[in-house]
Image (cartoon, rainbow, N blue to C red):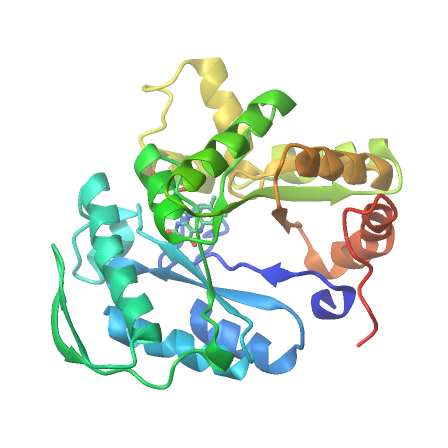
Length: 326
Ligand SMILES: Cc1cc2nc3c(=O)[nH]c(=O)nc-3n(C[C@H](O)[C@H](O)[C@H](O)COP(=O)(O)O)c2cc1C
């Protein structure tokens, strides 16, 4: 359905260990590159990302997996590179979570190798701060003389600088209540930093859509899911891993972060009737964002309504091209 309606991409979460709570939130997730291969084989236009923890897989295996997926999708595979933050997951691999700066320094070696494996027509040696390789040969290259899109969602200055140096897209979370001006300034700042390195980068964000025929129905459903029926134990486990606890934050701030987290792991809430949701998306575009990864509580129920009501409104305001029929 997403492919037919002209949704541009799908972006999976890569999770190895659930967050506990009554639902064991994200406890059963598919491996994302394999998942992408399946979707790419069954679709025609979508870009499908694989989300990969650089420290958990050798770069040459990863590079070849990405090339394989890219050939299946005839150039539609994208890479979401993540450095990891969840210690429990790393323990399962017998891997150590490096300190924050070193995580991105390691990822730089890793991504440099992946890009060389994709592009180098000759055997190459690699001598990085973390990884050394001899006489590397990697074929085939990505599909059709292009390379997969690369994105990263670094939030820290180091993470953002990594994306600016290396990626086509940076995903930034926008907290609920952040003003239009602050969002526009953030986007402009990232683009200006990229220009200074002679690069161009697109900035995207993440949102959770609750769209219903009336605003009242939408807020009722939002309250039902996100406030009354959230798996608060899982939410608190996630926050504790990041040292966000009632001990480290003031009560009001803790409550705000907790609700933000319960809403689809921290996406911007887009709650309302189709006019309201379309207007809010238009404002994000006006602030300079290129796109948004949206999630729903129940995709099968909610995506058809979103596609039928919100997408045409965006097309009418010339924020999207109308998809041609397949
Ligand atoms: C849209 C989006 C998707 C992300 N996907 C994953 C993921 O699948 N797995 C993961 O471990 N981290 C994921 N992250 C976390 C980021 O990679 C990053 O670690 C986090 O935003 C903190 O930024 P920092 O590393 O600069 O401190 C995601 C973040 C965002 C905003």
